[in-house]
Structures are given as structure tokens and as C-alpha cells.
Amino acid sequence: MELFYFTNPLCFHCWSHEPHLNKFLQIYDDYLDLHIIMGGAENPEENPSGEFDFEKFKEAHSLLPSKAFKVFSTVAPEKSLSFLRLMRASFFAEQIDVSDENNLKCLIQSLGERGGDIIERCKNGEGERRLQEDLRLGKRFTITKIPSLVMVHDGKIQETMGEFETDLLRDQLSLLLGFVPAQGKMRSLKEELKLAGRLYPRELEVLYNLNEDEIFRYVDELLEKESYRWVDYDGGIYLEAVYA
Image (cartoon, rainbow, N blue to C red; front, side):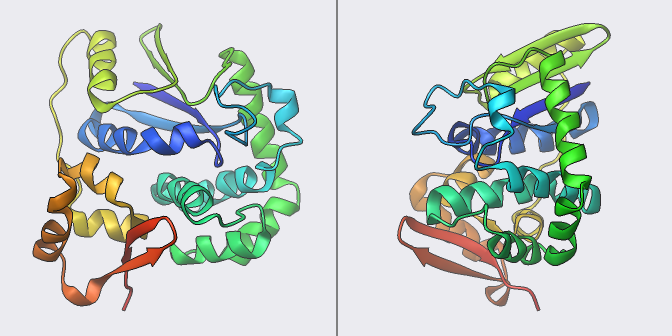
């Protein structure tokens, strides 16, 4: 099953629903081949419906973050979704300008990759080339809204635009496959935190079926004290990995 995820680093609707996509990808990893495609509106206040024009996108505030994502994905594809989540969380939750080169470098380095090298590759033409490939694909699928998910299997296409949850995606996967797929194993909290770098309470709630008042006990029971810390910021808290 080819799964095309049309999104943008500064898409608020994408950020709010992505924990469900992350969970879906883990549970049904054996059935899915994910492609994260860049494009779309960069400012939810200016564009609350998520609709966008691909030509206008070329001049958007999210241009450098989108290019950084495309280059990052060639360097560390297994961390690509984590990097995307990290950019969005930094922008929406902490009001960090992720279009700033230095801020982007720091975020990349927090995931254990070379931020300077990736930013330079964004600026030397590689980022633009990879981004244009994504924009052309968006036109081919006639995508008019983000987030959009397009599943393609055996000549059949199933498209989801806007809000989605894990159960909805499972039902659509079952419809295209013609049977209910077997569920795989979720990553452990330790593995997920190492991969993502940081996790927000809502992500923990969705991924591990937790209530808000269960989060701290769950983390304390499953993680070694020296491997994590809780970070306070103006909008709340997040769980951060501590690397030795």
C-alpha cells in the first residue's frame, strides 16, 4: 500500500492530528510504504480551512523548513516524521521561528544529525529540486487541502482530506486491502522518545491510550530517571530525551 501524506511544516491541522497518523503507521507498518509530500498553506490564521494554491506556496514562509525536511529525509529517513513533528511543535507550541537557519540547525542537531550540512544542501539547489518534485506530485493528485492522505493499492485510490483518526485510517486501509489487516507492535516509549527527541502530552495520550492524569506515572514506570526530563515552556510541558 502506497501512502502519500500531503503536509507542510507549518500546518496546524496536520500537527493536531499527526499523533493518530504516527500510531497508524506503527500498527500497520507491514502494509504501508509512506511518502511525506511537502506543500500547502503556511499560516493557519490566514488560511484556517487548510486550502491552498501550490503556486502561492513557492513564496510562503515555510519554504526553507520544507526544503530542510526534504533533505533531512534523504539523510535520516527513519527520523523524518519525528523531524516534521518537532518543527511544528516548536513553531506552534513554543513560537520558535523555524524559518530561521540557526533555529533549524538546532532542531536538526537535537535529533543527532548535522544541521549545518543539511541547511547548506537546502541552499545549494538540492532543496529546491526536491521540493519541486513534491509540488508536481500534488498537482498530479489534484490535492486542494492539507492534511491529505492518499492510499494507492492495486489500481484503487482512497483519499482523506482534513481531520483523521487512527480508526478511520484503519477502516480505509481495510477497504482497499479487502480484509482487516493484522495489527503490529507499537514502539516502546523508550524507543519512541529516542526517535522523536521530545514528546508532548497529547502525543503520549494518543499513542499509549492514556488519560491526562496517567501520563507522569506511565513515564516514571517505563523510563530510567537519567534518560528523560520534563521541560516547562509558556504553553505547557513536554518530555525530552537526555542523551548520554
